[in-house]
Length: 186
Image 1 (cartoon, rainbow, N blue to C red):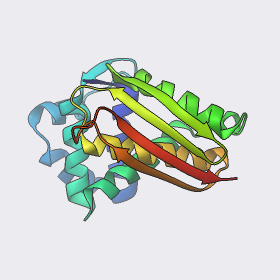
Image 2: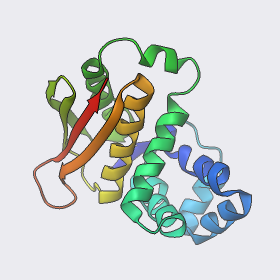
Image 3: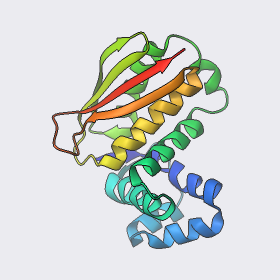
Image 4: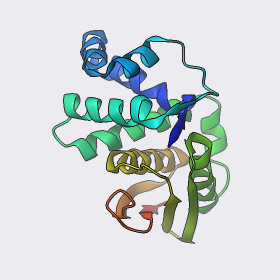
């Protein structure tokens, strides 16, 4: 699995903004040399990087370092990623269209950041949707929770309230798909 540069630049930004420069240095020092070298270089947003050294390992290190519950930490990282990626002028466009339309766009965006990745919207109703990732070799449960956190925060930015995203099936856990059950109110 590979991750696009736009998906990995968020993690060091999160550590610096939420925990400070000293925590960033500790986090960076906890990473394997290949990951450290990557984060100390200039990451081109359009380039693709091996997920283990650029995304999964650094996410796990941040979750261990800053959170008692790794899954909750991964969700918080996903929420931060949504705020980071969907800030500025994009926020205005997020409010256009229905929540269902937005969920469809979010599901299709997964393959723009992760490859090879196949995802789909299984169902959308008023206040409820099911999104599945059907292919993502090497997926990890922390990645599933980062995606869940991203979806939750993106829908909140869209204007939905009481957004909940449950991981009801897991490729990382051996299921045929990772499934996100999304509920919200307007």
